[in-house]
Image (tube, rainbow, N blue to C red; front, side):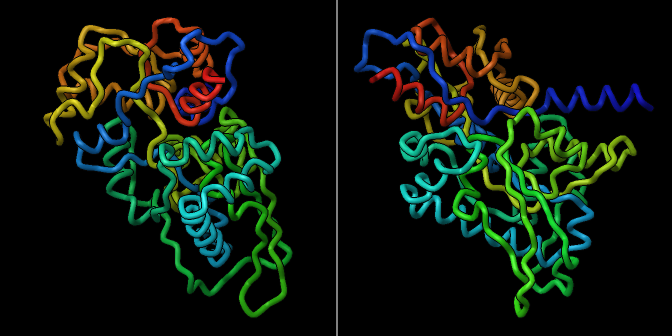
Length: 350
């Protein structure tokens, strides 16, 4: 049993995707009129052209025990995140300024504002996201059982136990942005003066899995595949804590990028599935670096290239390595993420 648990945890560690790298190296290319990183296409757009589905990358998971004991609180947290995601898109500058001040959050307001439209922040409930989530997990060989999806109701008869306290955690980078406008909020049951204690923390993405397997996080924003794998591990008797998906707030921060003139951008191909497949076929025979090789970015890229019949070698790489290659002007073609793309291009034009 112990060996099985260790093996499962190691597999889950490999499944964590990359959302935020903002640091840039000191070396800068001499040509400041050209972006260091050329974006060829959004992975989410190509994915939708190929599958007809949206691209759910991360969302809020709640510990199953909390969902059972405090359904009213879960509904309030869910509603607050929905409003917060809407505020991010409607009042980006104000929310970016607020986000920059969150303790432990690394992104600067300037980068957030510049990359906002490319980070695909948006709210959709778990129930409404079910088809998209099931399709994505199926495409990357992960299971999505029906009981993964939490049903949240604002008419719950129970709010939360008296004197209870809870934790809400989100990995540094893009996942925090959907929550930025509600970050630090307290919650009070309607008609009472009893405030539920909520502790907020920004954590390293590498710690998301540990926060779930240990049960330390009551609410946590996590990559969809990681949350699903923890849930499936619990169902299989290999995990101590169960988590369920409440909503999806990140709909694709990864992009096909390059600094080569060899490739054509997606908009130079026909619209729809056939055009997307032709776009992907141009990588045939090449090596493409990717963040999160065993996670959503790498697994999705692998799926898309296979759909196009393109023989592409995917090479897993740390985001900082990809970023430094772009900064120095070394040849690079990669599946890379926002806001690191925007941060790199801003830094290299200073």
